[in-house]
Image 1 (tube, rainbow over the protein chains, first blue to last red):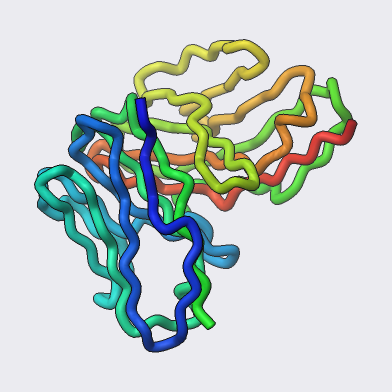
Image 2: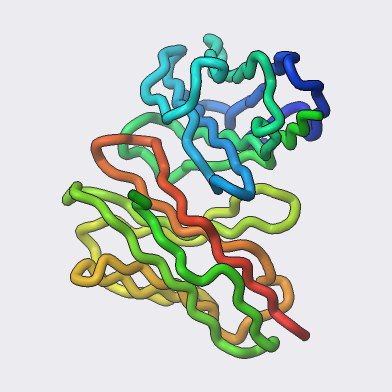
Length: 115
Length: 115
């Protein structure tokens, strides 16, 4: 059974550019959540998508957005990149939303560096 | 306010020693889950254990054990007979019934097991 797949694995972007990261959940999983991990702020929740709808959102500026497709794959987009956006971006998938967390599985992440 | 506190930033132990990682959480929900994750250098968050707020029974799973005490809002994790492969960053996390798949993570404890 394939795990959660995040692409690309590494990314280098310039300040002011935008970036799109992709997350393919485990087959059958319909919920995808995104997290940002930085040395200063640690692991912070960005948003969750379930059945193509955003279910929950963390405290991040509007430059951070996401979407989910009908096949449950999700993308997150960061516009007008800032140096502080350099981070490891992790996604996690699960069968459902709410309390179905037994199968909550993280991907290996995309490491974004903004120069 | 920080919902999950891991006061230990770094711990070093000699191989075969036991080590306990501390976690204190804060929530107003009566229904919640607590988790421990391990993050090796590759970046992926590896699930270790999970406990719900209604089950304070402490268990042992192989070399892992945990001590959940609601009275002190603590969820400590112990590795018995540590091995070099246990070297990683360990995260405690909280998920509240009211926020579904949103996890609140502690700042992590970096464990180094010295051969």
